[in-house]
Length: 329
Image 1 (cartoon, rainbow, N blue to C red):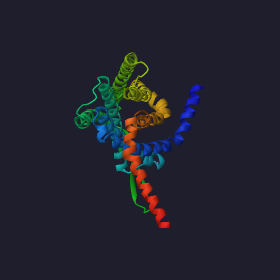
Image 2: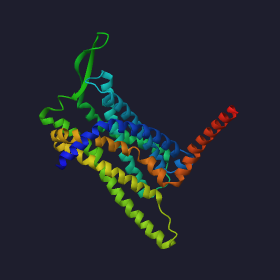
Image 3: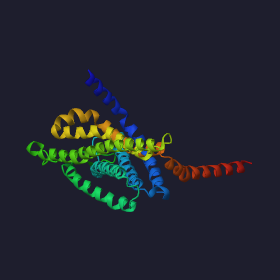
Image 4: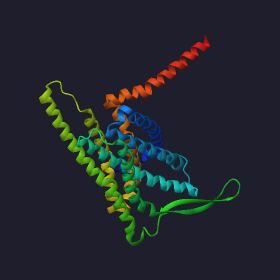
């Protein structure tokens, strides 16, 4: 009964998934653009953590832009077949989204490592360029097998309104991937499951526990030295919160990735069919964590946000309002 209830719930969610994701993507693109703008201000970019988080903000904006196009073309305006270049976009979107999301996980691990080692200032320019492209290059290389096991094939011919033949296409598994009991396809699932989900989840879990222990030690030490005048380490607390959110959203996907490699047909037919869209939703939620947490937990971030965003907007609106009043008089 419980299984039927959950399946019915997930299927009901399917009807609104596309619209919820579209709203999240539009908000996320806007929020991460602001997030990047603030983190790259002079008083914020001198810290290594902020340098990497600004790269993650761009990464998230690209993921959500790609997903927004996918949602509108393949979910809201869905049909039985697509033009060839839309299928090229689909494969590119899938590969790019998986790669960038994995890059984000590993960059988050690096942020946790920097904080754990208490390295407050590093060469952030190096971190924002060579580090990102090094991680992205490795992940993109590991993503190539996922791209190669799929192929674009024509489905059927349709006549459009001008009575000309239009060839439409779809994406299927390549025949080589399904040979020998889908050995190649399962190897690809193991590769992506372990390197893209399991390893970063284990590292994030380890650093979350390590940072919580270090935060507890610092709190006790400050309480001993300062008495009631204890100051909270908000940066570490914010990072622990971010890592915890990542764990809550990524651990289920990591476990599902391993199950998919072990029981490919059953997981694809019974689990991914029902919870795949929820997994997509969790990934999109991850893309919006940084801006929300920084806004809530960092006073320096809020003051920079006020100076660079709110004050100029307020000045423009005030000037426009004053001109309107003057014109009416």
